[in-house]
Amino acid sequence: KFRVGNFTGSSQPSLLSYPGQLISLLPDPPLRFFFFFFFFLVFPSVKPKVSKVESPWSRACTHASLDYSRASERQAWASRQWGVDPAGVEWGLVFPDANGEYQSPINLNSREARYDPSLLDVRLSPNYVVCRDCEVTNDGHTIQVILKSKSVLSGGPLPQGHEFELYEVRFHWGRENQRGSEHTVNFKAFPMELHLIHWNSTLFGSIDEAVGKPHGIAIIALFVQIGKEHVGLKAVTEILQDIQYKGKSKTIPCFNPNTLLPDPLLRDYWVYEGSLTIPPCSEGVTWILFRYPLTISQLQIEEFRRLRTHVKGAELVEGCDGILGDNFRPTQPLSDRVIRAAFQ
Image (tube, rainbow, N blue to C red; front, side):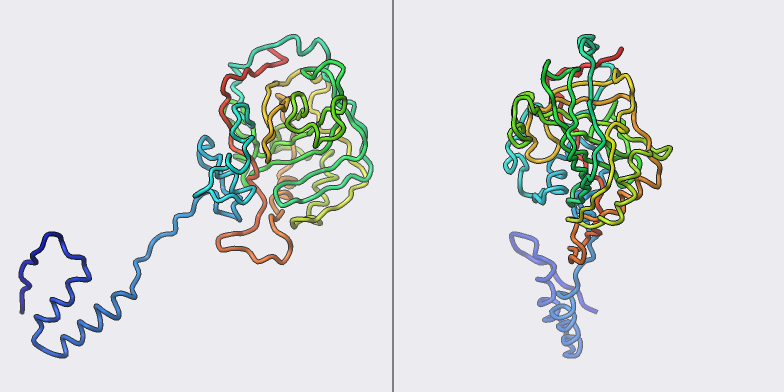
């Protein structure tokens, strides 16, 4: 037996400073060889097992499982959707409009919404027509239904005498039914949210000109819950298997946007001023959110959850399953904005 005396010095030696002193105290050469082999050859090669800490936005090709607080996730959404490194890049530096005070989506506190009877002075009037040969596209971030027939929206909170042309329908959904909508109502999320995106064709010549301008864009938002099958969306959900991968498109013979409006009288909605929820997050958007949700079946939403963020055959990075989902932006501060309601 042997004892190692106290080490002296101004600081405590590291673990790997001990072996040399231990070996010098061993009288037997075989023991010295054993300690030399272990401490200088075996021990340095042994690495401690560290559990991988996976950031919420790194899962699933940065389409994260968003079962965490929405309040601190602006950068997470940027990384998830547009490839910005969440560890070192502030998303607002890449898309400056995202630094604005009137960003979307938001949480709608129904008790704080202000009833505004003037919203009913001129009835909200969607003059939608059935679209023939609509293109449905998987762009790797969402599903888009591009409308070729001219459908317009007017009245309600929109400037009097102005028409807003319906450009496309976009979908945002969650990997699970507990999340998916971009807006929340009293902090409750829905499994999906549809956006009917319009641009002011009275003031501008194209949607590109209208983006970022006052009264340039109007978006009707529709919450979606799970229940009965939605007949109007069958034309879309039935072909999703054909556009499973990013960049795939398919033309459907018929799509009727009128089937997406839940309230025939169009009286139960909230209004606020905000922004696009996708880059460049330009403001000047009038949001019209209907109070009553649409209903789709579990089978229909599962068709969305089979979609992929990548092109077919692409090599996925480590930790990426390539599933398209949780494609919603976290809620943003309300700031000094007022939410108006067309109902009491």
